[in-house]
Length: 319
Image (tube, rainbow, N blue to C red; front, side, top):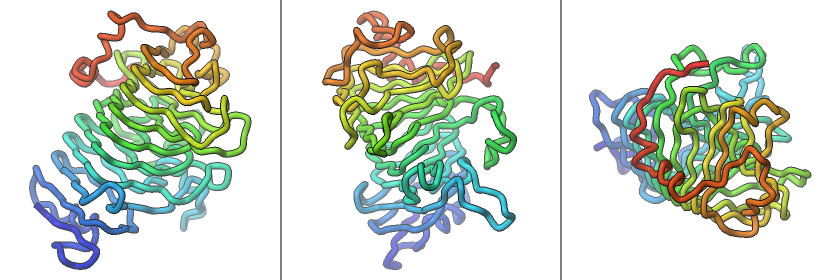
């Protein structure tokens, strides 16, 4: 085990320095409480990060999409991350990951966590940001604008790995959980931030591939925030095969009665898969949901257990 401590009582004072020192895996990096102002990148399989406490072990940075880099080019969404992992069998627990750059209206997208790989597990972590807080890679198959995917995995093969987020707190505003992974969220709180707009927030924007059985599943999660009533939406499709299922979730009154947006992609009504089961709270209004949103039976909901979702085979993306 490698220990990181700001007060020099460990092996390193920098998390990235500890990562760079790894000679073989599996390896555990224990991070003592402190504010670590750095960007961290992990590209090795079988690495575990363990914080001393989620509230006081903080990795933070303030890069954002509209930032102009030394070459005169905007940084863009996928180079704005605070924490980047592109690896399999990764674990993180009891850590805060933060992008502190501010509201999307001011700075554009600003990713706190960029996670790509298979068998990734975040437990009791806090992910703090505004627009595009958590990216669950990989990227969609095609970008809509030249340079839109510029970043560390733009040329990588698109393989949607399986990710688990357990007992996590994820905070943001626009599309603050987005991407193409098969991702299961268990006992998490999703906290939507007020932008003083007609629609203040979209919790999710999946870009599920056409050949994926599962996209996002939220089980026993709490969808909260500080927004006025009926100004937040559960999801909109970043790509038309988006999948998001909400099971046994507590939905606050800030969620609109319709709950879901098609992002002006009418064709997605026939291709996306949005569903709910046994949710509760003022934001759960199943009779007002759009016709393309499914209300699952108990038998149908049984297809979305953690075991089934995270044991589904992984295949390369298809158009």
